[in-house]
Picture 1 (cartoon, rainbow, N blue to C red):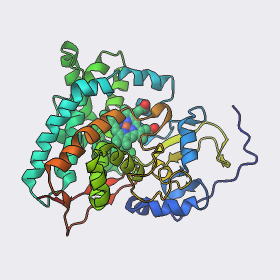
Picture 2: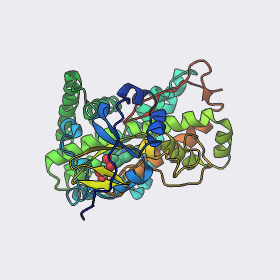
Picture 3: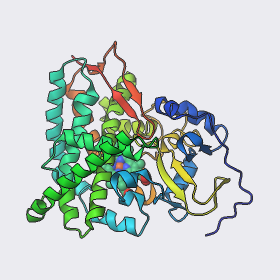
Picture 4: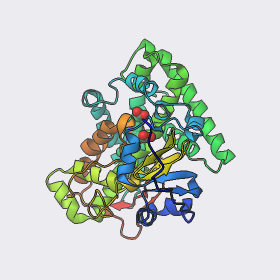
Length: 396
Ligand code: HEM
């Protein structure tokens, strides 16, 4: 399809936007940008930032015009070339190789019991840390890491390894400053993951256990693609459930009347979906224009590096009433926090099971009087990955 771009408006430049400001709080920036246009050139991040809901969603559904296979991708350098940076049919073949590992049947038959056990382990750790403990460091982070370790099948690694690998590989994908120390840490983790995979694969081929490594190891996927996909899943499967969980707890504790309503009717799912709309754990991901084209009346040049800012789209007032507010009662319109189209998050069921089915109801019943620490407010930060950084809590 050829799109006539002669009538399209040029994209405005927003040279006042800085990375530290985006990290601290991107939402006032999105509001100011939105008043002008749904797409802006942002020199500080070297991308055309797409902030409108309609524009983000159109990109997700059109891999012909907007490819996931970015030429200058830092993710490819940090983690290798995974399916997340491929278009169909190559992407589709690798996604199919994941089989049912992340899907509802395996979750019911296998992972829910694992999440339950891991909940008990890290709830005990939180309790032992005592009132005033940081719910992110003592519970959400190790819980998410231990869950992912089991799903992936790394019997030869610890949850601390998973946390270190995830953070350093993600730091590599965002290393726009080309910091050599960041590359060194990412490369070290990449080597460690390769070694752990090499050690596990023969054992899992001999005794398959339903983990992702076990399934991929017999799928015929070439080793370099297998390694890249496992690294991408380490990067994409840990911070996000951690942040979704901590953000939901923080939002509910900050809105006691909504917590009462959620608790009374077991509406943990509403609370979770609203919190990832409100603060999308992955707030921006890249695409590249394959041709000169037009989107929402704006001219996009071939090769343009796009930042699909779903964190902004999720607060688009054209779609969500009073979008800056956390409101579990808002009419359910689809948010874009899990992406869309062919790359729609493969771990969405896992995230919902570990956070909605297991962690939230247990935390709020087994820690009576759970509340924010009065003198130490929660800290929130991040742009590409955004969430609650620390959440000191008390309980009775
Ligand atoms: C609340 C938690 C989560 C959020 C908000 C989230 C968000 C996302 C988003 C936005 C994408 C698409 C990125 C793009 O199109 O460039 C994605 C893809 C993906 N996610 Fe998640 N994710 C979460 C949890 C998980 C978990 C727990 C796992 C694994 C256990 C996982 C595995 C994946 C994989 C494998 C992909 C690549 C899909 C593909 O390329 O087809 N995610 N996720």
